[in-house]
Amino acid sequence: MNISPAKVFFASFLVQNILLMRYIGLCPFFGVSTRISTSFGMGLAVIFVMLLATLITYPIYHFFLVPLNLEFLRTASFILVIASLVQFVEMFLKKSYRQLYNALGIYLPLITTNCAILGTTFLVIDYRFHLLNTIIFALGTGLGFMLVIILFAAIREKLDYAPISHSFKGYPIAFIAASLVSLAFLGFANLFGASL
Amino acid sequence: MRFKYFWNGIILENPVLILMIGLCPTLATSISARDALGMGIAASFVLIFSNIFVSAIRKIVPDNIRIPVFIIIISTFVTIVDYILQAYEPDMYKVLGVFVPLIVVNCIILGRAEAFAYRYGIFDSFLDGLGKSVGFTLVIFIMGTIREILAQGTFFGAKIMPDIYINNSLLFMIFPPGGFLLIGILKAIINKLFLNK
Image 1 (cartoon, rainbow over the protein chains, first blue to last red):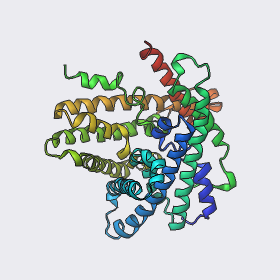
Image 2: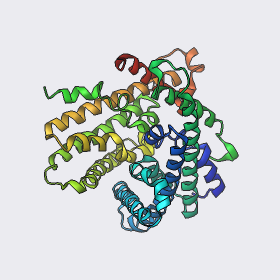
Image 3: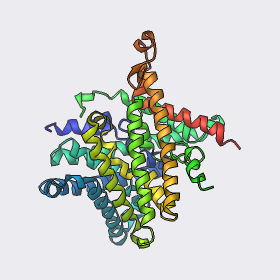
Image 4: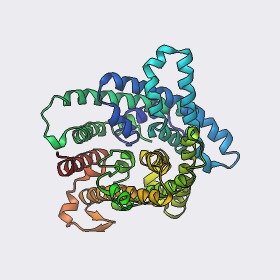
């Protein structure tokens, strides 16, 4: 598909935000987004792994699975490659970049089975992007994830002190807050004509 | 006696409303009763068969490579479902889209393989998988039904609301905000009924 990279960026970052519009990656979203500092770390880790994962699965699909007619192995091969990649990155960071490991380390195992990462690698193939758009899409999606998770952590920090009826405490009020933030994101529809 | 593994999954350990896992497919594919039921059945197929297979090979799999083995078993069944849906239900596949291959990272399935099927016998694992599947399908189907009726005034595509409602329907229920709002209210009702101490 031939779309300008700018459109791809705005579509993945805001218009079709991965958390609020596509509903991918919600489990870690509701689990981690209770403090701004942890959300920031999680967001950075997601951007990092998302870029790496799409960069490694894109050539695997186009230069290995397609020529050999093995497209049906997409699901199995992608998840194994991503899981081993995350393990490898974790070991490498632990050995060589201690500071980065201290910032991101605890989030990396959580990300292995995060559907946001795997979902993005599937989406870039379903949309038939070329390599530049693939990188832009991964970057935009990761930034969109980070933006929403930080916004949401700020809301939840305030919610802790709000008087909420007993049955709405915790998850229910978080869902309803997500509904309102998502309603605001509907307002980005057709921003710069960016839609995929 | 053993049937408690089955009943637990429906209410007391309902994967979506009590354990709060598998949220993505529940919210994303519950836009109509038919699509919700399709997603429920697809995930149930994978969950039941992966539970049976994991339980069957649990004694020959070394402990430290069990997770990759689980993932390969699960992704095999996901690929089967993926291709069956593409061949026989292409319209539904277009709506469910990327969520069919994403069943592979659904926390319910890997979670049950690790927490239950790896430790118990084949029949118990089958019952556990069946119970969790029914619990998951029930929630997603109820949500799909409510959202379809409120947004379009139809049930399985058949008109059940008067024209005056359909012309002024709550169209926003079909969009993401409606899904978040509905699951928030359902969870609050469950809290009120079951978790009050």
